[in-house]
Length: 326
Image (cartoon, rainbow, N blue to C red):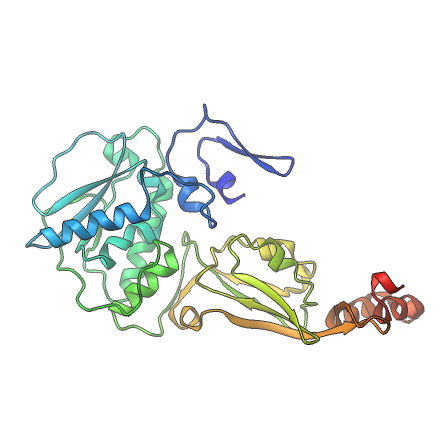
């Protein structure tokens, strides 16, 4: 439901387990596209691949530093100074941190993105873009790459392209993907900083509180959290590249009061370089009759602590036999 929360026109609504789209209310700003972690919403006229190809072609054809100015579709026509090239998007409010900074990875020296108010667009997604511009500047500052590379509007001063060859291939305009590519260009391996608007998160599990119920993995929209059962064990793994910081895992955790799972919205080079890794694991209790799985041992221990000794018979029943063999 991230698109429902992000839609500025209430064109998307949650109703009885489904997302309902009202086409007449839609202003086609594109925020739902860059907010969606599963690429369920797509605008075929503006894709990451098209933007990347345009920026790369512009950089290759220019003999001087290139500045890319993103413009709202409905912005007032405005001439650009030498070295600046326009890239039209439905609305600059759709530009995430990754979308804003991707041109710098692709060879541009600077990026500009006027808000709706600054450009004359009537959609009015100023607050969204302002937050993303601020975090994009913070990211570059932390990486030592600031040098006025993110502007409100294009002007004559364009920095040289960031030197170096990133070993990380830019697979998408996702915040984590662009961040690690920039960190690679800057030869930074240990920077950590918190974000207000970035679509990123670092999940931590407290093994003393987690019952390995796997609820967090069932609701994770991007597949950042996954569980695996094999050889009498169950483990929960985490991929920081896939996490969008939606906190659905935290909200659904039955042990939320014990803080079994927490999420921090931060950019962390070392964490991202880990890739998918196991956060927590434990044994799986098996049925004495058929040998099939019953539940994680940690969950049964938690049930025992809640029931107390007066319900020992109930615990014995559920811990020795699966549902099919009771």
